[in-house]
Length: 120
Image (cartoon, rainbow, N blue to C red):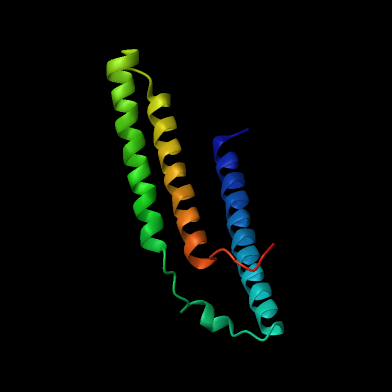
């Protein structure tokens, strides 16, 4: 096929995909708002709700990623002597960030839902 025809087909398909995506997002937002109205909640209050542990979550995520980066540097430099292994760097950054998010979850869970002493 001619490159001009392929470009037109690609333009049509990408435009339709974008239109369908926008319609789908808008449809899901309106369904969420209707569900909130059925439960007696105001959908506009959703925007003004506080998120008290956002800074803790970001801080622990970045701290964990930095710790993973430092750990991967020390392992590649001093233990493996493999200076050309970027997969190890990304793996340790992801593991450190995930550990930070798990720590954030546990801290938030402990603060928001304290243990019930009356539970058996």
